[in-house]
Image 1: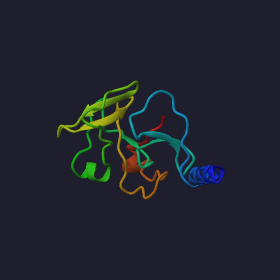
Image 2 (image 1 turned 30 degrees about the horizontal axis):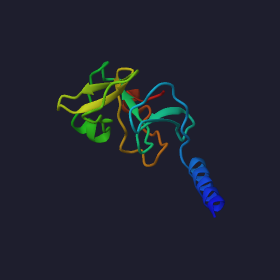
Image 3 (image 1 turned 90 degrees about the vertical axis):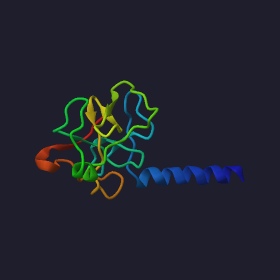
Length: 136
């Protein structure tokens, strides 16, 4: 019976890997829930806990977010927990509302509300090229 159960688990895991975005190897530590994966287009990108593609914004500066109000409604920031600590290339930006946002190599990270499923990267190039997928 144990062999049958283990086979079922192995098949289920194999099916999940085949049908969803494929995680890729990334060097160094990442915040909890953040992953490196292949997007639907095949590019290596960073993704949040829901495997939704993360983006950077050209109007941000190192360590500073410039996406608020309607911008943040369309491009939700990747928020950091109150007890989160910077690690390696991962830092924390304090937003003007006091919230804490993850940044990779100094650039704040966001998701895009029009990405419908894990692996989508429809926000890449939006805003006349200001939005780019975040790459590991």
